Length: 115
Image (cartoon, rainbow, N blue to C red):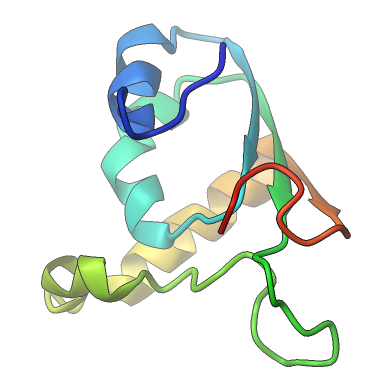
């Protein structure tokens, strides 16, 4: 299934389709702890996940910034960030990653999306 997040929202599709003990494979360019928080009820149902990230275009491999974009959210997520619960969400996200997720990074910038 290919979802462009323009005509169809990824979060709606995942929420509607994920069932208990599913295996999830997703290619993406960006992700944040707030996306996880929004989807956690569905994501906690899965047995395992494979996340394949494409580096954002213009990413500098020598930079200390994340190739995944800001896990702390973008300026569009300021309202959520202002709730001051990042630490709890980050811990829950880290636990989910450790228990259920294999993460890979495609070295070619912008391989999947035009970021």
